[in-house]
Image 1 (spheres, rainbow, N blue to C red):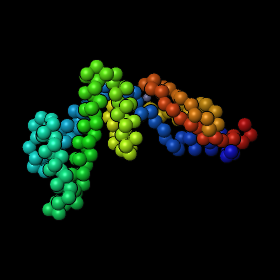
Image 2 (image 1 turned 180 degrees about the horizontal axis):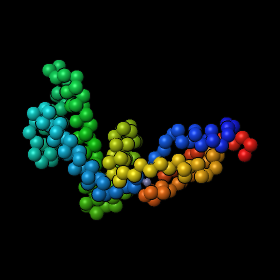
Image 3 (image 1 turned 60 degrees about the horizontal axis):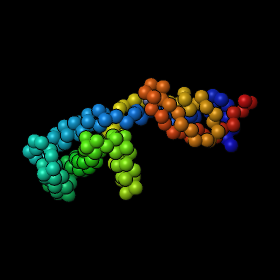
Image 4 (image 1 turned 45 degrees about the horizontal axis):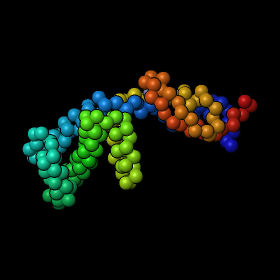
Length: 181
Ligand SMILES: [Zn+2]
């Protein structure tokens, strides 16, 4: 077990800068969907692709165009990067629409989001899972290090509650022996 003073231990925990990721929220998911569509319309304009509704066929056309652009030597490096970003944005939009679609059909929103995120992690899409997790939460960002520091630094996993939004979060404090304490 590491031995340090109380203030050193506090500094160590705070250096991780752990913040609350916010509660799962259907309205936040709808806003994310709107923002992703706006972003995709702007990306489409950069590649001179006309999009209007950005539904099924239009989204497929755009994906095809971006795929071609990302592999074509006719484009600059920044255009290649934008095309790749566009393809990732389409993937995120489709994953988000799966969740919002299930919720519209009467399924519990939190359960639908959790299942889709777990499925993405299982299939090795950790980056996309993380983005979908963010896109289905209301932003909070409260500093929760005070909560972590209010419990023993004993390496035992616990569940804390965000003081701002009430969202529960899991954490494992480092195992530290406080010198002289
Ligand atoms: Zn919070």
